[in-house]
Image (cartoon, rainbow, N blue to C red):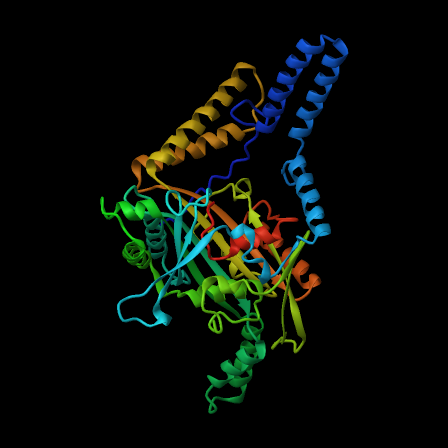
Length: 505
C-alpha cells in the first residue's frame, strides 16, 4: 500500500541566540552598552555610587530587554508599538485617504505594462517594479506579476496521484530556486467568499428533472438546502517576484532600456507559467493593471467584485477608499451597499490580519493539504484570505544556514551533557530538523523555502469581525497550528502585506 507523502515544516521552539542559551540578542546589546557606560562613568567620576547606579540600571535594562508577552513577543517592542499607535491616533496620522498618496508601507513603486504585439489593454500584463530599500530601481529592486490559478485538488484521488502532485509542487520550488532562475518569491493566496444560499438553492433546484418522483424530489430539495447553506466561492492567485538584476543577467552583457527590460521580464514570466502548469496548476489568467487594482480594492471593500475592475485603470487605483487604524482592526469607509444575503445596508468594512509564527507550525509531519482547514472547513463562512508567502533560497544558501544552525544545536546538546543538565528537547528537535534539511539537499531534488502564512478576515461590523477571528483561531487549532498572532496596532501594515505586491518575507 502506498504511503501518503508528508513534510516536516520545521516547527522548533528556539530560545536564546548565538550568544547563549535563554539569552536574547537585545539583552546582549543592552549588556554591552551598559558595560561601556559603566567603564566610562567609572573612569570619569571614580565614584562607587555612580558605578553602583549604572550597574543597577544595566541589570534592569537586561531584565527588561528579555521580558516577553504571553504571545512570546518582546515586551519593550510591544509597548513602543502601542505608544506609537496612540501618538499617531492623537495626531490624526492613523487615518488614510487617497489625497495622502499611496500608503507609505507600499514603498516606491512604478507601474510597467507588458503588451504583446497587437494586444488590447484587457490582455496586457501588469508588472509592478518595486524599488530597493534605498529607493533605487536598479540593484535589489524587484518586479511582480499576478496569475490567477486553479488547482486540480485531491478529492478522492489515489494516494499515488496525490503523492505525484506533491512531488511536482516541490519540484516547482526547486527549479525556480535554482541559481539560474530570477524568481525570488512565490505568494499563493486563496480568497473565500460565502455565497447567497437562496441563489445556490435555486441553481440546484433548476438541475432537478421535473419528472422525478415526489419523494426523490423532496430528498433532493433537502440536500440542496444543506449544500446551499455551506456553499462558498474560492479564487486563487499566485504573485511572482523576480529580481531585476537576475532578469538582466539572463540577457548577457547587453544593456537593456525600459522596453527591453519589460520584454525580458515577459520572457521569464512565460517560463514561470510553463513550470506552474507543469506542477498541475491551471493558469486561468495573467492579470492586467485594472485587475490587480480590483484585487486590492476587493481586499479592502469586499462588496466590489473581483471580476468588475471598472472604472479602475491602474493597479494603484485599488487604494481609493479611506480607512482608519484601530488596535484590533482596520476600518474602511466604503460605499453603502445592500447585503444580498441579509438585505442589510452597510458601508463600513472591518479587517484583521494574523500570521502563523514559525514556531507555531505543526510539530508533526503534515500532508500538502494541511492548510485546507483554514480554507474549506470554517462554518459559518466568513470572508477570508489565506496567503502563503514562500521566499526561495538556493541550495548553497540553504545548506550554509542549515550547517550553521546544526552546529549551534549540537553545541547546546554538548553543553547539556557536560553540565549534566536535563534537556528540554528543543536542541534535539532543532538538530533533527536541520539534519533532515541537509539530507534533502544532498539526496533529493530540493531547495530552500522560507515561508510565512497569513490570514485576513473581514466583517461588516466589529462583532462580526470578532466572531470571524474566533472561528479562525479554532480552525488553526484544528490543523495543528499552535496559535494565530493577530497584528495588534499594526493591521494597516499587515493589510499591505496581504495585497498582491510580493512584499518580501
